[in-house]
Image 1 (cartoon, rainbow, N blue to C red):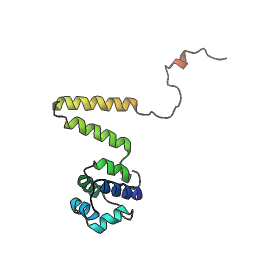
Image 2: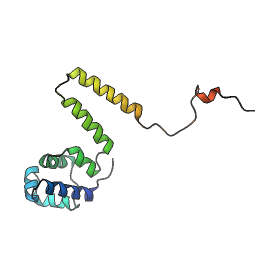
Image 3: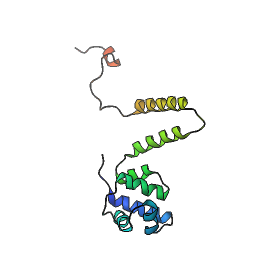
Image 4: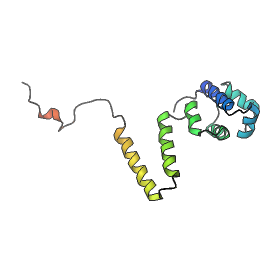
Length: 135
């Protein structure tokens, strides 16, 4: 797991709060945290838990995953996968069986396209085996 990037997290939270036109006190009240604690988070002095980040995200009306990425708790790629899964599972136009099949297909494509291990010895039966032997 990545280390918490509290400085950038605090700056990001401050910008989100200002964009939402909320005072520090209003956001603290909406998220259920104390005003001084939120101030310390914004200044990069405190490392909030995932639960606090979730409460802040809800109050700011942004995804918790966005804050987890900012805090270094979640990798950007993990967030993309989580959001994709959430969208599929929340879609009311497809039934549960279709959702599960779609998630299985999605996962198989992710595995297929994942970066593989570093180049190593050529596996047996590859095109190199058909080459003329050198003497």
